[in-house]
Length: 151
Image (cartoon, rainbow, N blue to C red; front, side):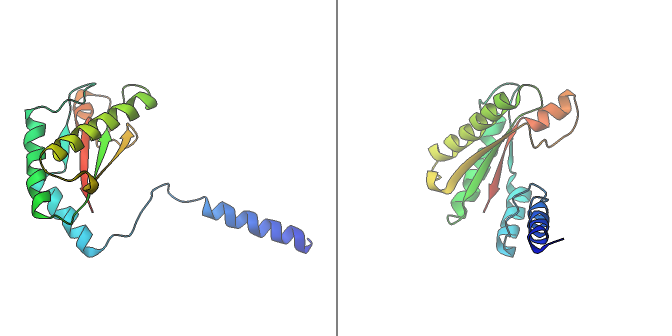
């Protein structure tokens, strides 16, 4: 094998290894960020649930978001990302759009109650990151949600 072929094989191997990631975008979080996330999830609650094919906030959703608002006001330097999720029914594209509407509904509610828009981001995962696996109503209910993650 000549040097050119060895270089090509080495380059190909390197590219192959680089492409073998898990697909997750892990970003290192500090101990402080990790403890804030843990506190938020445990003491406040990070999830808001939605009815089938809806991005409307119901009473229970607003009560949960009110808790998030109070916590975020007590931690003014903390930013948050609101993830929108959907159950497995529907196309990928439809569920991405529905997840986006759910995340935006939560963001809008937080904004109307004093949380600056500059502290909030949204992202939709559609049906790609289910909280519960199953083809039944219990699983569907858990997957129709928005999740607020703090950073």
